[in-house]
Image (tube, rainbow, N blue to C red; front, side):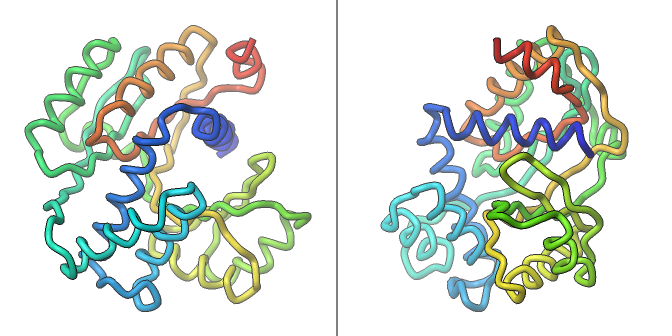
Length: 250
């Protein structure tokens, strides 16, 4: 999973330096609303909502926005949208496999936007099932290192179903089967280890290594898709090696 980890590190750096905070806030607020709607508005009884709120707080989303989203989702306050999750499949420039996860209140608008942005970037949309088979659904928990070693984390989560712990530089990620995600995050809490996020993820079975030109095209494609209000997450099978990342930073 090294390639994915390198991309995850890049993505985290981009998010920290990016001017797209408004889009990120909106994405996190949507997650709170959906979590409250599906599992109730009490964070102590709804771990998905608890994690969505914590993630929003760590990203500096104002508390008023968080609370309003929780109330809209739980029905305590009117105005919640009828959000629907849709995953589109396609290929980016050079044949990179892509899953584009949307959370939208307008299916037609989301499909039109994703298709248009993919076409402009030199990619193409695929039929349902044409790309998804190349990915596995996983649970991923990200935590700050805080002077911990990889073995410290592994000991805490192994019996909960963790499959691997990856070093992301300043953070560790714990990868598990999607069905074990909650058990892993609970095991970390019981061990007194604070985590940054606990989210469902898609991981590629086989990765495609990109050169600098291919990486630039793919990153432009991802940036374009990410500008759509309907797009929540983008998963790919691309691997950007360290030397290529260094070339992109120059």
